[in-house]
Image 1 (cartoon, rainbow, N blue to C red):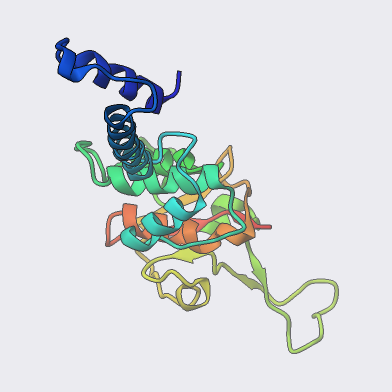
Image 2: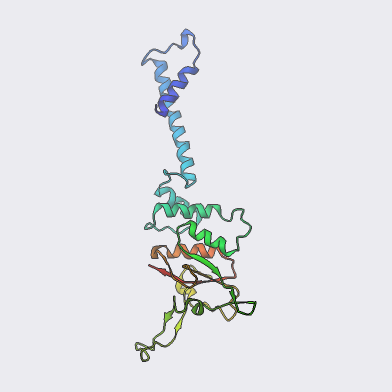
Length: 235
């Protein structure tokens, strides 16, 4: 039975039983009752639609709802990303910062990234120094060349080897990779961490169309003073 039919049936049951409320088929009172039921059914469906569009936890949350919430929450709108992943990103932003006390822990960032569909892992820059203590390592040491930008001498290679390399996969302050690639991390790496595949030092793959979304989420979640080294291929 439709919502309209249910409202009509319920309304008729609520009328008194006296003769004055007798309801002939297609009579004035029945037409009035049915007309009011139409508006009540519309109010009911509109209220359900409002709730469905308020939270991305249902199948009726559509592309227009996603676009509206991305605009409200300051998220990047990428029409090439599936609606399912866009809903995950919206839910993540709605829940931020939430009640988690350890929001500066690296595993919190890892969970936030994985929750919206990024298959990456996050690692602290803390390694056993072999003497009972801890040390930090550069991304070149950790990756063994993974994620390294090779530098050529003009357009020529120096023999069979290129002239060194640099690591520009950095997220520090900017949503655009080109601006962060020249960020001077310095010699103290205690405030750096790594994002990549498993195990540490291997490359993870992220949809190229979601790069800005990825960087935005990292910037929003990581402690402000920290810098992320990326072992990530955007493909």
